[in-house]
Length: 516
Image (cartoon, rainbow, N blue to C red; front, side, top):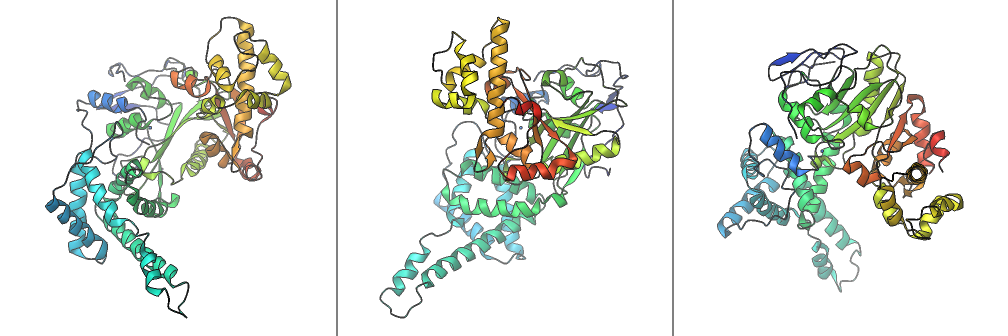
């Protein structure tokens, strides 16, 4: 595999030695336990991290302050009030942006104006950035009233083309659209212009509700990204313990499924029996766009705690049978709607089969993020329909629930930890049955309701197994009562499974079918 551009050459897939900040250590033999090298201190601790406090803690780790703004991406905490621009400053900004919109793409003065705006925006505070966006929204918004003048000008004139007003409006919108696209391409042509546009679109998405005029520009930029970030242009690279510290820091910050709690935790995830792959864009070589973490295990994983156990022995790669994708994280909110995750997994499977020719079993250990919200909304009648008469009778055996329990009441009960084994068994039976129904039967416009199920089933995977108490973290219990799911990736069945989804029948394994 080629070296990672502009960062460092990643070690080979079979290498197991690692270093960080100049220190190195051996990961130990196959019988050795996991953990960070002795020279690495324990340090306590995502799209960017969904937990704002994590970024602050990372700043503390590396001796940086918690300054927000100035780096694009916009503030994510609290409501930002736009700064006030003076009339003179606003007029100057309007002239600058108008020049960028109207000039030819090769106009050097317009390119310089775009460069100055980009520099100003990146250095601005969140309030100042919002003020700049407000002016951009006003200038770049499509004029929905354009057709009105045209219509007024033709009223009462016999023989005029009735479609002329519509064509006039469309022509104006098309001209404005072309100007916006030229405007965005001008930024893309600048050094560091593409990373700026990615961060800028994240800000547009964040403020779009408050600034409706941004909609057209944001949509144009999203359409351009679908071409600029085509999967054929992306590069797949491994991330290892030998990767640059700046890249490892981003891995910790961007992890959005299972938070990386310490350097020892990160070292465990990059050990010799693990792999981590990421897609990079040639013009953003230091910025992973999406990454997947892989564990090699003897059996299909049933809980995330064993996968993340730093004291567990290393797996013997000569006997490995399963590759488990246990975390997939998008890193760039500005690339929302640009899909390349499905290509990532298929590329990684190809890479793993090259390195391990005997490896045939690929599956995920995935969260069920929408389960609790769905169950909470079920009425008693809807819940009874989902469970069926037999399971409703089982539910009636639980004295802590009402005769006709609602979904919210059952959810609260499933999130408790009863002492009696009979109640634990009942919880598991009902919880797994509800999860199986949610994943396999709850469709919205022909697609699975759950976003993670939609992603994996759309890749051609099948719902293979529901795992009870697979993630007992606060997040896991809150989202899905601690349940996780295995999606099986059988390379020879991906196309057939995808066709089943198109036909409205998601592919499911026997264990899941028995729960329905």
